[in-house]
Image (cartoon, one colour):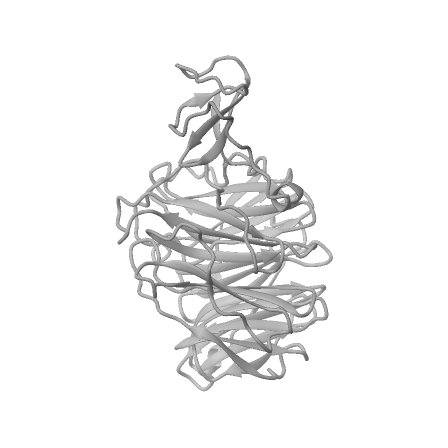
Length: 435
């Protein structure tokens, strides 16, 4: 069996859901990692007519996904299940956040790894009369925080709810009177950090668990127009320790989409000038996501295409970059995906995540390699990423997309003998495994 991998050291791409229904296109996703267990949820493009969220679980580090079903809540009377967020607490209980159309945000708790959901509560308050959108959830210990934007009603703006009992009861607070897209993270000392895109990108933080937000810092302007494959300047925020913070967002000030980033080393008081994270400057780059690992390494991945403007024939891949110093310098751009793909629909989800623990960096995304949009998974060992080492072509390997053996000898046919071979194309080396 011939298996072409993504760029070293990312593992072979694994399809997460085995749902044979090719009429459903899996969109934005969220996942959480606890040891060898990975919990995943996503929405579908058909969410207005299909009352469910695909939910999956792996108990072997992502080699396969043993649990795969469609989560649904008919009690709300709302078909539209969307914007899922997944988290795991200090007792390894799984938390799931689901938005129902624009009317309700609910929290679910599972004690058995997502097999059953024992407790359900409303996070948003329907009595305000407002519409809700784009919630995000972070969990620290047994404390759960959820932020979202609310339109109209008596509490328009950015709202935050917190629970000290794993989501059984909630307190709600006003964060900002302006609506917009938010990203939320929590530092080691419990400080909440929020990035907010409205007319521009701003940063706020709370040192008292969300009751008060001490200041607002303007990070940068945001220029964005939607297109095929992306429709919002989704941001992400990640924190290392208490004071090192990194924010990403999508911007088209250069004439096409780029993933921009800015860092702060003083707890958000000052911010660096925006930088373009993607080294490929042509085409479109979007859906960026950043995460720090426990050692302070910064990892970012994003969708990338050489085409511009994008359309249904655009070829996409998911790329990755590593920074050892909080965003001041970057390693080479490498591929997470082991193939390029087109999307059968213009909406590939507003967000997809990258997560890091002390061993690996994990990535989940949606792509159309099998005709519809499906979720795929890959991971890479942190020591290999942080060393910034990758296979280098031998002098006699051509940059021609042909297969070479380990000695650099070009092969005239697909190898049948088990072993590791290499392909060099566009200056990148990919491993080819024959089993």
